[in-house]
Length: 281
Image (cartoon, rainbow, N blue to C red; front, side, top):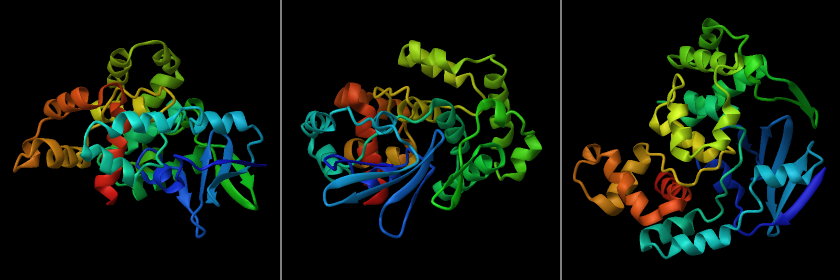
């Protein structure tokens, strides 16, 4: 299966390297191959076209995952006029699109991301998928889907520890069992306000404010009115707007106030441009 779209506001490197996802890997030709749901897909930019090749025969599924119906051109127009700082960061990462990732997978992935680095997070998620997910064969290679709550609930704390989760093993175990048992129903989060969804996420083991906001933004909950704050975001917001000689003294409340005032309902997308620009450039 192969699909093509125009490459406007879609740069594979920007999409897959901006910190929102962990199951996409670069190939020698500059394309990226990843697993989502039960599909394997290669995404390549060629002659101002984005080419999707894989085992997914529905363009609707691809369109939804990559949020292709959303008009990023008009989003960029709205954000560019905020100030020169944001305009500069957008010009660096203008090919970013925020994916509609599976809520359950995003939840566990960002619990794993706490105090962790991207290569290690990717390795842990890959090992979890190999141990408990479904095998998918594509182009003579083996890939694995991310396990369902029921599949992952078969893992003991010790099993998770052996996969390299470290202190996160108990947290992933507890949250998995709350969801697989039906005690927590993730589907209810789609029906409530952003603040209510955040409060419910914060009740889960391993979910703090930053992880909750990442889940709200990067999953198919698609809440752009959140502003996840990590060390890079604190750094860039201090450097551009706050100017405290000691960035460690900059409070999240201070950063959030600026995000609310300057970026409003699009602050999640603004955060991605600022984060990616600061970390990469």
